Structures are given as structure tokens and as C-alpha cells.
Image (cartoon, rainbow, N blue to C red; front, side, top):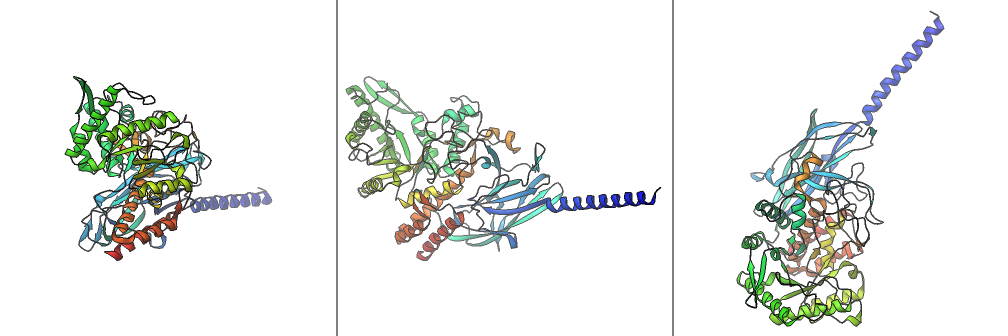
Length: 580
């Protein structure tokens, strides 16, 4: 063979070998599996993390999560498995109990949840964003895989976050507890996260002072689980939904109204409780508020836009009287409020109808709570006012942005009345909302805004609005045809039906509801609201106000930086501890 040709072949072979070795080296260099942690107030997307990372709790140099909490509090954070251009199969997490000498915080109090990442294909308003967002939290029961390709297309990163919730029992001894969570795969251990949990010598009160009123629609639940609403199977399942809500510091709306049955007997209204067990369940589980419709069931409805008939007025007053008597006898009169059937009035006739309803209720009991979904300062002065009629106001969050409306709210509070607020689909950025494609801090900061305006709680229309989608696990745009800001992701849908979990996550189905990051962060804020109230009751209202104002100046002016929120929470706790 020609020497020149042989030399050329050898050179090419050598270069090819070098290229293969270099390529293999390069692939190994860029292919990486990383185990890391972040706080709860961050939404780690499939390919990137938040622009406002919750990294205050993560000590990367020591591979340690450093967190703190009071007794009776949930302390959540997230572990993230990042696979950079490599497939990982059979991922499992192994947790330990947390120990401080002979004191043990059982591993049963350390719960792990697989975060279902869903594709947002239609952003919620101008501040929403396309992409893959985490939301549903399914109890981790099976191993899972992380694949570095999506239909054959390589991805730069692939994150799978795992939600870790540590509950601190009320009788837990104070001090620093240590433990760990190990992440494994079919090929062995991937990494280990150490946990340093400081249990502070402070206990959240059992009684809740700020109701979070939200509806859990029985028809929505029955439809999602393909059950007859009148069946025993549905009734048992529905109680699981109620239980989860109460454990999440949510007060289900209207529920006792579903257990009421009324009819006319010999010209008088008779009310019957069809499910006494629901009332007992609510009382045992700590329901902080009983919201009941002012409209009596079992009687033909009269709109109220025209004067009620004398007969109808009699039935309404008999109904109200029987509810009040029952509530007084069973010890929850102070938690009772009648909700006006006319919602968000927009005309002079509707304003007059609300005054008519209020007058009927007050004729029976001038002191009972009567709720209206309207702000104290009317949009049109010609419609008149509800002052002197309503004593419990549910105001739209947009009005908190205007000085004259805040002044009117303060006047009602000074008069001894109650005011709560609600977020709806038309409350746009920079105001908070519950959309899936919003910053995690939005849900948590709702409670801080509540304190900033001295309000008594929050309301949200429903948590189970699934009727416009095949199922919310597949389609996050739960409201497609609203009159404000549609389409919207997660609107009216803060929980998921547990019977669909396996199909979309590979984890076991859940008998009952599955929570969401948004709902868990709402609870986080509610717990912080109770800490603010604890400081106030210890004589530190001024300090609480100053700390809250450092991160929340108004409904359109608050921080979304989770590290800043954590710092403010720490300051509140330290102020409480100084006063113990």
C-alpha cells in the first residue's frame, strides 16, 4: 500500500478516535444528576426555576436544609431532582425521623408529595406565562422516572420537585432536630439532603381567628368521581373533601345549608336538619365560621327586586328564627352569619333588595351577622347605602387600592362591624391571584394583605370548578368562558379529584381530594396570620404592623421575594418570644 495513503488513513483513524473519546467525555461532562432543595414559596418549573428563588433555607455547602417552625405548624420545603441530559429510572425517596437527643419527631410527620407539572398553554392575563408549571401535590407512593427527552427532543434540564411537609406536633419539645432524606434510583444513591429543623418554644392557637371561606361544590365532586350525589358512597367521599379543607385552614361555605330541609305545614315554615353528623363534624374539626343562606329552602323563591309578599316575609323570619335558635342551643351562634342571596349588586333595584333582606333578618335578631358581598362605599351614591343594614361586609380586592374605600372600610371596623375580602378573576397584576402561572408568593401574601388592612378573613368562590374541562389534571385552563380575563389557569380550582392521580402521575390514586401548591401556601399564610394576631394579643400590635408593612404596603404593593417574607415572619416570632 502507498505509504502516503497509509499515513493518511492512520491520521484519520487517530483523529476519529480522539473525536469519539472527546465526545464521550463531553457527554459525560454535561450529563448530570443533581439533588438540591429550595423553600416552599417557589414554583420550580420543568426546565427552570423561579426568578425569585426561595434559597434562604438551603445550605448547599453542607447539603442541608435549615428550617424552623412553631408547634402546631406545617413547615414545608422542596427537594428537586435535576437530570441534565440523562435518563433516571426508578427514583425513590427514603426519609428518617428527626431527632434531638432522646426526643424524636416521627417520620410519620414528614410527608412527601410528587409535584404534578402541567402544561399552561394559555397564560392567565398579561402577567401569566406559557410553560410547564407545578401544582397538584400527590402523596408519593411509587417510584418515578425522569427522562431527558420529550418526544425525541433533548431538553437542557428536567426538574422534578418533591414537596416535603413537616408537621410539628403541639407537644413536641423545643430544640434543633436533625434527620435526612435520601434520593435513590435503580443505579443506586443519587444524593442525600440533611434536615436541621428548629422547633421554637411557641404554639399556634387551636382556635382560628380569620375564616377562609371557600366553597367545595358537591355537584362538582360527584361528577368528577362519577357518583350519585344522593348515594352513601358520595356522602363518605365528600366528608374526605371537607376534612382536607378544614385541615388546610379552609372553612367550607354554605355546607350546613345542604343539610337543611324546609316545608310549609299548616301555614307555617318548619325546618328540619337532615344531617346532624355534619354539624358535629364541623365543630369537632374546628370550623371557625358557619355561613348560611338567608333564603329559606323549600319555599318558592321571591327575587326581592319587588317587595316580598307578606306570606313570604313570614316564612323567611320563621326560618331565620329557627336557625338562630338551633345555633344558640348548639353553641355556634357567635360563628353564624346569614349571607344575602343578592350577590355583587349592580343596580338600584338590587341595592334595595339587599336592604329588604337585611330588614327581615334584623327584625328577628338585630345582632346576628348579616353578610353582603359589596363594599361599604357604594359605586353609585344614588343607590343608597347598606350602613345600618349590613354588619358583615365582603369586599372585592380592587377597592383596597383606593383611599376613599379603605377609609369607608375603617369606619365600619371602628363601628364594630366585620369586613373580609375576596379575590376574583378580574383582579389583575400587581394584585395577587391564585392562578397556576403566578408567582408562588401570591397565595402566601393574601394573609399578609389581610392583616395590612385589618380585615377579618378571606373568601374565595369555589375550589372545585372543574365543569369546563375534561379533568383539571390534563387541562389547567379551568375557566375558558368568563367575562373577565379569560382564559384562566386554576381559576376556582385549588384542589384536584384524587381518583385521577395515577393516570397522570404514576402515583397511587387518592380517596378524596389532592391538594395544590397554591392551597398549601394559603395555609402557610393563614398560620402566619395567627402569629401576627398572637403578637397583637401580647401587646405588640404596633410591632406586628411595622413588620407587615416592611413587606406589604398595600394590595398592589407587596414583596414576592420569599426570602424577605421569611425574614419578616422570623421577626414576628422573635417579638412574640420576647414577650413570653
